[in-house]
Length: 242
Image 1 (spheres, helix red, strand yellow):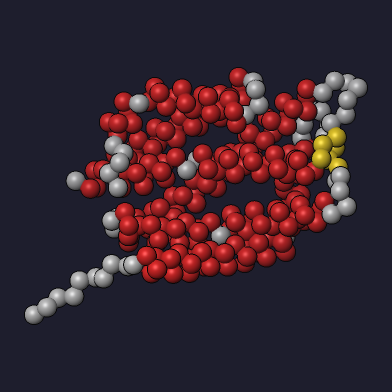
Image 2 (cartoon, rainbow, N blue to C red; image 1 turned 90 degrees about the vertical axis):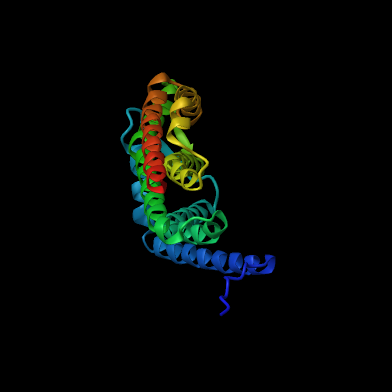
């Protein structure tokens, strides 16, 4: 009696699978962007809200004819990307998991849920903590004879950089889960390099936040907590593998 072994995918098969997963991801972004564009004015109001709560007044200006048109499409795309993120993570996981020899069904839901939740927490941290402190710091630098008239394009670029950057940084526990699942990361290794990691976190925080010690500590504290959480995630994954 002969048993059929699963046939390994060839190079062209991998390209075909990658193409279809890319198409599905692109469609998810398009649908998410279309939904976001329907609520774009409300989204812009939310994103502009931090400028109204600074000690020093901030005035935003459109410096090009098509400025607001481009901004609305840009914000719609970013919002659509965030809405489609669970689908993007799932498509990426389905593509790379077989090559990593990881049990797909066991880790698919935790990876998607954990990654999306961590990303949203990071974005919320950037919006509610980093952005108000940054705006307060930079708007307070100007002297009494200089008004804070900022380009709205640069404001949204600054806002997007801080929020998406925070979301990506908060993916540290997810990276720990993936690396632990494939056997590249262990809790003893992370504990051994804890001091080195804290130094790296401090340096990273100084680049992300405005150049003052308070903002740096505000960013560094949750990153240190994320590192400790990552050690716990690695411990859980390695315990389940034994």
